[in-house]
Image (cartoon, rainbow, N blue to C red; front, side):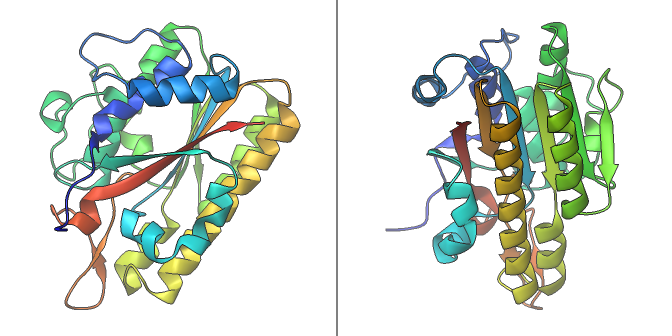
Length: 266
């Protein structure tokens, strides 16, 4: 069988998560994946009280296919995988803008690697309008700190994936927030420098998976009686260049096909 693109566009992420929380969305947002929402709410035992969204940058589907054992901590904390296809260009600002606005790149306006503050409605605006308490925790100079800037929510900037994890654990234990967006890119950095399947890159994949598991464990111990939706949701993949480094931004399957994993923290 020839390579093919995954079924669901990234723009369906926002509505899928919002419907799990039973939040109303503007009409312009792409619809949810309804059967996935039904399964997740059944496993949650109702609507999600809180959401913890972990965005490990640039982990393509083929990494899961070839190095599945490295992602065991993600499998251990999730129960549903959705095959998403990234945006064109398959770069972080374009992809995360679509994930959090429910729009194609032409709709939200970011179509190349630029990082303006988004002026259109985002999932963060929807959460705030509903009286919810979102927070962004990200590595230094993360796209999240640029394109979602200027909103009435806390932004925590950390040096690396480990510091992001420690801050996320602290934030969870504070109990103050009910929607955590967490963005790390240790794998993306290593893959660009050494290649997507390099020792350095794969070590970063394993580290970020273990960090996701630590965060999930903290959720369960801190909020044992709450319905918490967990998601491990990359933005795009990365391919090997002729020079041996990693790159993305193309329509290659390696850049475009990704998997999102969802689970109920119980």
